Length: 254
Image 1 (tube, helix red, strand yellow):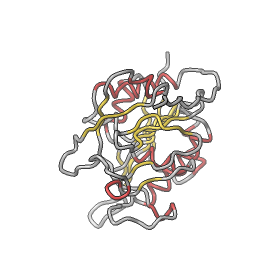
Image 2: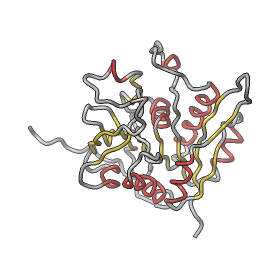
Image 3: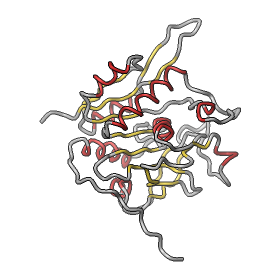
Image 4: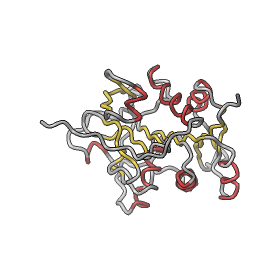
């Protein structure tokens, strides 16, 4: 049986005085895809949409990778917070085009970190620029001195995240100061941090596997359980499901 072919978007840095422009891919992404049974294909920031479409037509799914820098808030009609460090224009432009294309194709998607944030914005959602100021009583989500910061994940019942992780307490890594505010209309929240920050969303369409995680299941700081995110994603690239709209879980009366 042929392995599912999975595209992975890359990072980009413009030319500097001492170096040329360069692209790179964090090893955790393609190692995780390989471990889960896929064949990773690395996608640089194409300038031509036709070239990008040709590449996407050969894929079974895509990982929208994260970035250590931020989306530019001015492109969302917001005044930029002093904490924001915008990613290079070529990187953000490409990520926006890529997100739009793969969503229109209804390709299986695993969106991680800023990949999750970009996809949400492209599909009509919004972002929080700086959690320490905009979120009431936030838990620590970013510590520049401690890359292994972790917090509890509260999973919404009867979601894909619930199916992936099952019962029990889940702890995930956390290194972000931006976050999803309002999810786009075609997504629903499937996991939060105890302070209410959205940590995962997913498509409301059962026949479209689209999962966004604010945490990084590909990272060295991830737990063994987080590999199940990649395994579920790879399974979805080969599955055929009935087109059904997932219903929002009913809240229990107080």
